[in-house]
Length: 112
Image 1 (spheres, rainbow, N blue to C red):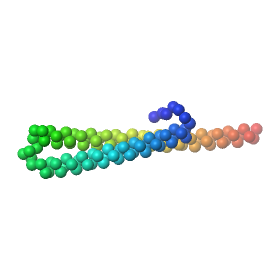
Image 2 (image 1 turned 90 degrees about the vertical axis):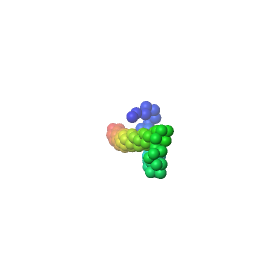
Image 3 (image 1 turned 180 degrees about the horizontal axis):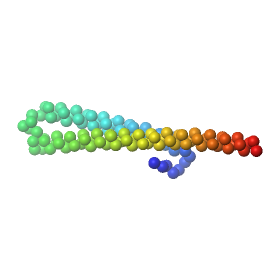
């Protein structure tokens, strides 16, 4: 991931904000998937099998499919957040390295 504008510190701060937002979204999607699973389980237990046909059966199947999509989306977001977190750390490390290099250069120039 590359953000082309601004200095590195600004980019790291921007990436941190994005990571925070993504983490919040990941948690919300994961929570929704858990709630959907609970709802599906209750519906399947409470609705007699004989009535789990036709539109009701189709609705239960679609609800199962939606729960699966939500779970997969939460997993994808978790992977994206891990990658983003690694990028934030890498950029912060680069920022520190750059600051140390600038300080060393200034010190070398002041001795000349």
